[in-house]
Amino acid sequence: MKIELDENKVYFNNGSVKKEIHPFWLRERIEGEDFLDKGTQQRLFDPTTLNSEISINKANINDKFLELDFNDGIRSILDINKLALEFYNEDTVIKSIPKIKWNSKLENIKNFKYQNDFFDSKEMYELLVSFYKYGFVIIKNIPVENNFIVKFANSIGSVRRTNFGEYFDVKSKPDPNDLAYTSLELSPHTDNPYRNPVPCIQLLHCIESQVTGGLSTLVDGFTVTEDLKKENPDFYKILSEVKVRFKFIDKDVVLEDWSELIKLDENNNFKQVRFSPRLDYVPILDKEKLDLYYKARKKLSEMYNSEKYRIEFKLAPKDLMMMDNYRLLHGRTSYETKEGNRFLQGCYIDYDSTEGKLRHLRRKFNI
Ligand SMILES: O=C(O)CCC(=O)C(=O)O
Ligand SMILES: [Fe+2]
Image (cartoon, rainbow, N blue to C red; front, top):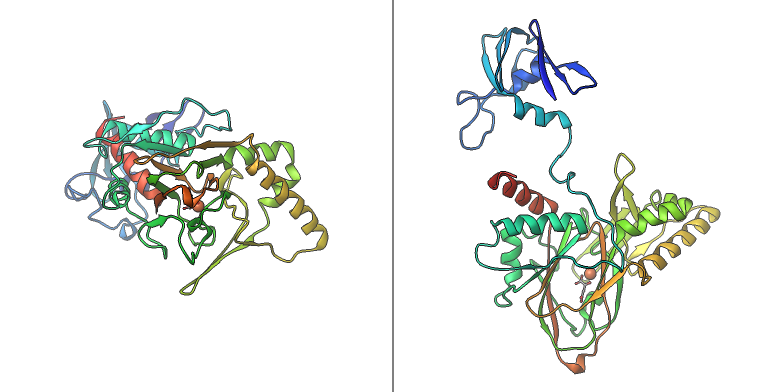
């Protein structure tokens, strides 16, 4: 990417196209203490109040800097490398980490180990990159006292509190308001599909595990839905078009949200899966359409539940699993309460937490 001048016009040239940069766009990016607050780097002027007839009287390139005199008397020196970063027009940090598809054959995935000064370390950066590649990460050696999961979450970003509280105790309880709080098997599901917005990331921390069952299961919803797209395009299409109603009720709240089981972004790429057969209500559609829909949902469910895609492992006390609730499905095998205790603690954070931390660590370590 190169910046070029032609008289008083500024162009960017990426090797194949050369386009003029609007003078106003450059004027908005003026730097210096008179225009930007030193600490926050926030603007001290409001660009919407500037005269829209901005033009450049004089332009010059001096090594890595672009020197501009504007017709409103303002002189500006802009860092060309910094400008070039803006030409991608999209997030280049998170999107540059490729999602790695996986199934039951996944192996050799790196676990991380909690230690002092963990949260601002290179190890934390590696952890987050691994999280974005695989959709989950396991961290060992996390203290089990005093609901440490909340400190952990708040040291990456901020806990996303819900009506289950700041954090929740996952153990078999009398009179539970969710099947998670029993010893029953939980088939692969995403959490809280009835919330608007759905919590992005779930943390589960093992405090006690004295039972032989209660294995954790994970499935990569990205791999499964990409396979479905190849194998059964009609199924994929209808599951990414029809919105179903997800609902949760207890004595204090009624939560409801509508969404496709496979949600695509504006470019028709994977964005999010929701799946919780305990909580979904398909809308009333034409019989023929519902016929296809039910076949498609059954196929998707068979794939999510098949051994081909599932990994299964036991969380030991002090292990904390962090997983992407928009990409992965999780579950557990059943267990016998008479064998002893099984006790996990859970909480949620949102993507702003992991993204904010990742960008901060890149800045800190000049990555
Ligand atoms: O008990 C488990 O391992 C998982 C429970 C669960 O699905 C949850 O807490 O969201
Ligand atoms: Fe869950």
